[in-house]
Image: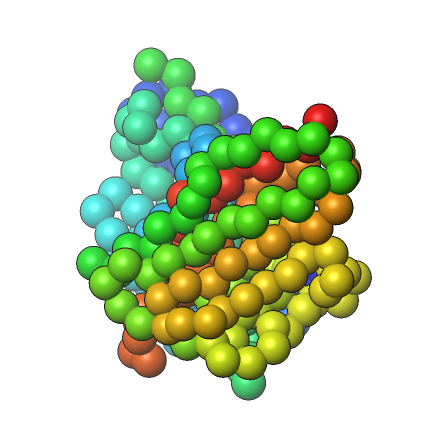
Length: 111
Length: 116
């Protein structure tokens, strides 16, 4: 099935550092979502984006809907150990109720 | 908030047996639920869309006779993996939309299926 490309695939950072990851597609999406998945659990929604150029924050997390509608990025500021997990972007195209998931970014935070 | 419960959380079965996984929306009605499969260190791949009172819609490449989906009520969808084989071992996750204005979908906690 179709997937969105996420980068980086994985990253190791020191506690307190900022993190940035992005998601790109060859198709246009009208909604972008960012999820976090802990090991052995289902994904949990972090941020939702609805308009091109939109910038939305949720605590230390900030995400933006790319102007071209083909990409999105997620920033995490001042990372803490509990930020460890896999972050997935998900996009929804016009006229469909389905979400396509990105390949995921695995984040590890070193205390 | 919206809660989706999945059961069992893990199961180990012998090859050739059938396994049923339940997905329940606890505090809302879900006319549509979705089933995903996730292999280790990979993303979520949509398998099928479960529609209450009608047949499920399967994604390309997913065998509908092997992965039976039943959505008999507004709060319950089941996925049955028939004649399971080791290659069916995976993490299966369901999700549901908690309302027309809901953002995204709420996911269950997943079922780790291991076929030996």
